[in-house]
Image (cartoon, rainbow, N blue to C red):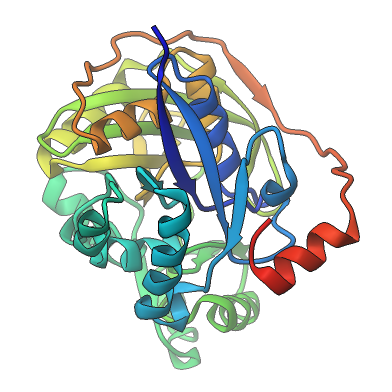
Length: 348
């Protein structure tokens, strides 16, 4: 019996040393046993590598940044949808999620299905709200403080011991050993992502993550934990290995049950030498290392698409421990005509 064909639009094609989740999500979808995925890549920049990966992205379109206004973005999506009949849209970047969540009903009316967190779920797990989040759900979190100006930096030593982490509200994290470094990183982050900038207590230990999928009713559909084996200067996992860690799985299930999380998520934790887990971030979307979970037996992108379409999805019960991923660089060769066509016509 032939598989159902689906047109699936994907963002986050920036597969660089700070990779977006788009390409690994696409790899999972291309391996689906439930449907045949035709991928429509949605790119903000015309040099996002995913645009030029012809074996993964069937058609690419340039779209305006959400900061240009949701109306512009929706108008562009209407144009693309009129040509491509998009069945499901999977946004993969933190900075765009708010716009897509606010436009979820409009997208549904157009016939484009999504499976996103609610606005409340998205807002309460912000880095700036992490202390109250931890208190509400009984999770250990590092002490943190949101600052909006340089005047707060001088008094940080009253609240924190150096070094401290300096984090952007969407991306970027730097370890600062003194107030001068905090000021430098504050300028760098606020110029890029705006304020607030978050100052977070530095917890010494091993960085461990969980990629998970909630059905919006309190059930955990998928959860795979991993330990970062190699971390880049941008704090990104360049290598990782799946773990047999029941405590991380249980913590994830409890959180999804309590919050009734809807969609993909990544829990970033520090495991200390005395076996305590501190939640340092909750990312409200599928992470860039999701293909490790697919390889370990839990095809999270496939399950998310099925739930977006209202199909029955049974929770995954197992995954392979000891599966490892290693990222690598690869030169894609294209032609200036491709670049010109995307720049002029907005599609490739």
